[in-house]
Length: 328
Image (cartoon, rainbow, N blue to C red; front, top):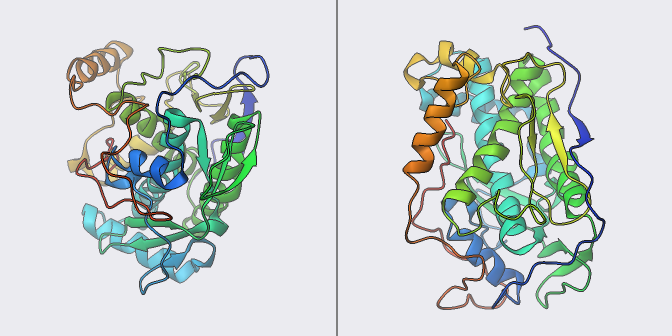
């Protein structure tokens, strides 16, 4: 498959004042355990479990090529896809969503970044090849200066955007992306789209199920699509940056050629909402319909604490929401 461009690039989207003060959060959680308990209410794929070392947990850094191949095959079987490349893309999508969801939600809701770097993550896979559970080896988080939690090893940063890119992409998803792409000889846009598309889906899910709309407070968050080529991460401080698929076509989406290829490999899955094969008017109509159908009640507020706190050092049980966010 032809490579449509070089690797990921991190580029500025717009300049912002450095070290912006943290927004005011009434009743902000005072521990990492409480923070992640609230995050887990967004859906089962936002839940971070306790790091008890039980059978079935795999260290993210210890996933062998054979283990990845097994999960890719399981993912393909569960989706009714025989093509190994399509199974690899589906695996990357579900893996990226499961790893990124807790970090992005904690960031948007509370300005905190749990350490989901590969060296600090344990995973448990289901029979369908999806990561069904995620745990942290050590309770570590990065936050704005003076944000200290008694149950977590903390690191201060005035640029949470840069810290999120480092933890999520440089220290976890991109190394896995490179391995899977090489192992299955995936095209550049196809593989990159499997990662970047999930970031957008997660942020959309957080927006739809909380009282923190991504576009409401430009000082605190910025998520935009520029000429259909970039999916940007939200911002609390520092400069906005985005994960860009370079040299994408004028109608390419952040997921690049991924949706198109998968639609042909698994016709019953259909096309994604932002598929570049759709006309702009059709995409806008689809997005407007989704916004009109957004829930208006039972939303998770950014200051909402759980009714009963978790025991010290423990993370919550899975929430009732599925947190699928539209991934395949």
